[in-house]
Length: 248
Picture 1 (cartoon, rainbow, N blue to C red):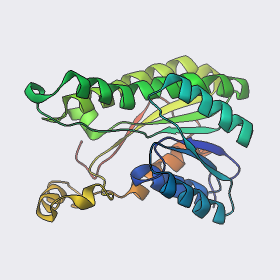
Picture 2: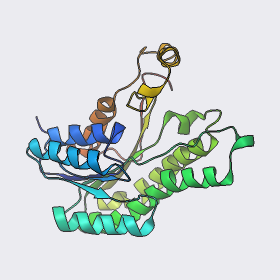
Picture 3: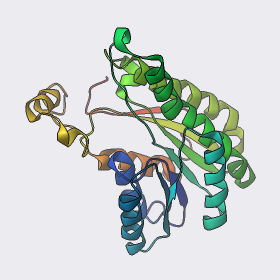
């Protein structure tokens, strides 16, 4: 059964890792997919071609989610190309890890700007379209770190905790217009980025997780399908932890 048949989705940071996994699973469920990339044009165009091959409409957009004006332009372009926007997955994010004593102001500001301000930019840009439609699902990507903190990630934890507070506020503001806002908090997800890490370290992390494995981009994507579909019509303002039991 295709749960997203005919729906139009925007996924930020969609050309690799978790974002790419979401784009692929969305397409398999019948969604038309608009996704953004920041630098990797080649892999973005490849993905658009792959998704089109599944039989849905797919297009890559070069857009920086941390820029207010670029987010506005993106939404304008997607509405023009796709006609409507039913689902937004705010997935773009970066890390600049360091202990606070070594963290520069620039590294703090950059992580807040890309991870947290981007959520403001995209929600503000898309709300007009969704208010007109009187329907929409916004899915914001937080992290287990945003809930329990992590040494060496004060900037990242602050940005991901901020996403939760922002999303809960949006659920209250936009709920009367049938626009739902939910949060996904992934745990340790294995992507090409974690593939570069030392295997022994990664295995240590796996063993510390109750389910004894890292998550996959598909694990996150499946939850996004649920939150983007009509099956979750009465769910808003919630944080869904997808972390194998890291946070219980």
